[in-house]
Length: 412
Ligand SMILES: Cc1cc2nc3c(=O)[nH]c(=O)nc-3n(C[C@H](O)[C@H](O)[C@H](O)COP(=O)(O)OP(=O)(O)OC[C@H]3O[C@@H](n4cnc5c(N)ncnc54)[C@H](O)[C@@H]3O)c2cc1C
Picture 1: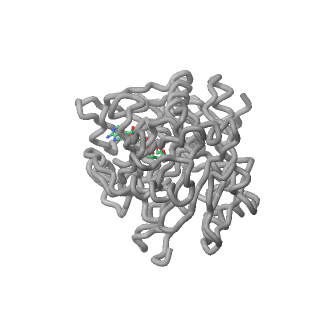
Picture 2: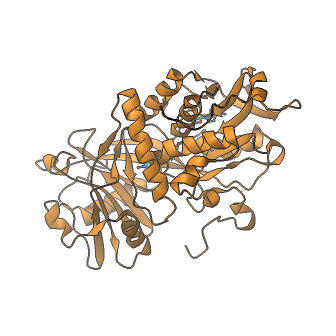
Picture 3: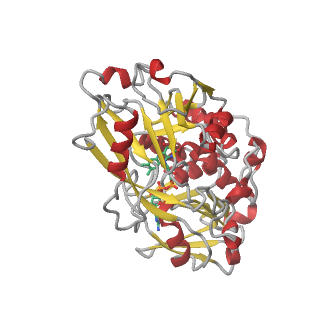
């Protein structure tokens, strides 16, 4: 493969067991391990639980892929992994991304829906009901826009497994049931990582991608006190029964879209009936704060989504008995919903890189984030982000020093 990036193996790094230790084998850690191993780095990926467990954020059957974002700094980051997803699919022989049209809808007064449509090049449609057989009933004053490019559904667990397998194929070592409890700067240089069973590994660099556990781990394991407000939220994946007789209308095969409804403060999203015949996944973006080790409840997420369905998709999806199935999942939410991609700093300087706070919308960008984190760790800078026009200034940790809300203002 034509890869102008030099192999990592700086002579000095060779005195370590590994060039890079990646903590956490969700989508971000798995993609980082793959990106680094692809460059010839000696990589160790450590995961606290079994691989592909269901206790974090990267499990389940589907995630939406879309380049429709109100903030202009995300579309370049989505388009970059669009290529990277295709490369990984070609390399592995797996297919994890299915192209599906995207429908955006919301009140015309909602600046976010208009900006998302504009940034994605989505076209406004006058009669959204006619286009999808009356499935949607939008109130007066709402706008709908459709994009037939740059959107789809990712098959979640297969995607994580694909990157783990590719990383191993490239020489990465993967260890599950290895909970990291200490991250230390070694006096002779580099990083030592200790697990709860007393094992110790040494590396030149370390990437921390531990999702909802990030703030806790940085403090307890690395001993670093930072304003790093990454709040674990307990959210639910909800599967609803499609009204009998209408099952065929809401399928991906029939052209039914993924959709996002911007209905302040309720953002509802969905995917067509795909993985579970006769059911459709319709969810609410958010959930109550939780302890990542004690996830329970789910707040009033179900009631909120049921009310949305009754108002916007009457006669198409059953809500009376509640959802047919509900799966627990966690968001790692920042106050501005922007990611954290930065060097840890302090005594760790550029030796530890943090990738976290993906705020319920990071999966689609996993391969891009992994590439960026690997470059930051191995090279001290990221060529890929610069070339793709990805502005990392929005993702710095120090944005929370002067403003606890980060990039958001109180009016947002
Ligand atoms: C219900 C739901 C729907 C979503 N929908 C979308 C969507 O449609 N589109 C989209 O793009 N994104 C979506 N997301 C967001 C996306 O899934 C997340 O942004 C992404 O999965 C975050 O991955 P991660 O690797 O950062 O975290 P995780 O997947 O949680 O991985 C972190 C890993 O670190 C491990 N770990 C923790 N502590 C330690 C330790 N001490 N030692 C070793 N390992 C440790 C954990 O066990 C875990 O495996 C959704 C998320 C949820 C929950």
